[in-house]
Amino acid sequence: MNYFRLLLLGLGIVAAAVSCITEYQPGTVSIAPSLIVEGQITDQPGPYTIKLTRTADYSYKSLNLLETGATVTIEDDQGHREMLTEQASGGVYKTSAGGIRGIAGRSYRITIQTKAGLRYESDPELLRAAPPIQKLYYEYTVEGESVVSAKNQGWNVYLDMKDPETTGDYYKWDWAHYEAISVCYTRELPNGTLTGLGCCSACWDIDRCYTCINVTSDANINGNAISRQYIMRVPYKSKDKYYLEVQQQAISKGAYTFWKGVKALTDNTGGLFDSAPQTIQGNIHCVSDPTVMAFGYFGATGLAEQYLYVDRSDGQGVPDVDPIVNVPQPSACVVCEDSQYRTPYQPRWWVY
Image (cartoon, rainbow, N blue to C red; front, side, top):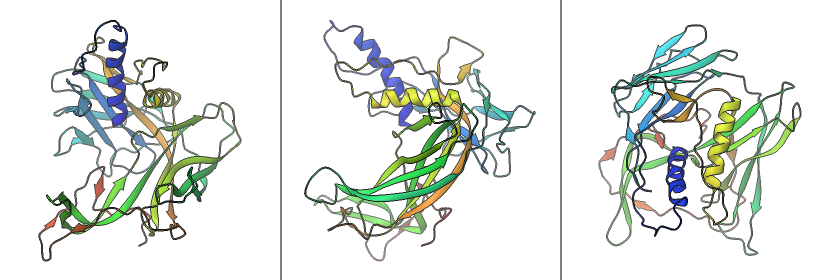
């Protein structure tokens, strides 16, 4: 995720900040190669995915290296365990469809043995059930300018829920928008027009905000309602309905502290009086060599999910539509990939 690259970049910014009298020399930021762990187990059916990457010399545009050939195991506090299978793309490990499943009230941890011989473990995470989403709704608004345009109008999505009477509840909200597509490959021609190839089967693009971190605790509202919790803003890019899936996550105190720290880092604009970035402690540790750093968080998360179709027919004027892609007829087709950005599988509540 982009969260972790921003986190690691922050370490380099700290090093530069303590040498403020030295002439600035833009270049590559380096830290010791470190494992990054991304993933969680939930109380919803699997499979669950764990992504392993490793830091390297990098700049703003480079990517982490995939950590391949590792042995990854998820286990609970009652002795149930499953070894994950590495996917063909490398660095991504999955449980089986009928394998281990998260159960509220049990604790979970992950163990990782790299092909270099290093062993990592996460702290145990107690999985707590998430309260249901009581209401998911939207409101049309025009922001800022007096003249209504396609870019300043949209639909704000909100959520209502009831916090349980128990104390120490922590929440995180995520969303995903699925949009049916017919073109699976696009390229720009010298004249600026777009051409492409169609999809060989039904296909959906997946849109998420990877830098939007939406967390809260019940410290000030314990046992009360949470109303008008902002989720996201739907853009006016079409008159068609906008399909949205929202997750309400019950997370641990450790996960809340971690994501709150990452949010502070991503919100830091780099101004003169901004506080310096700090190392954000996750729950992954190298037990075979405590001097080796590790980043990321393995979570055990209760989920409550709901979908929403946003009616955009009341938008004013012409939508801010994407450029038209010309597909030659007849033409070859492209297989719809199965990734975090695209899927050939119909979304759960899709009714079109």
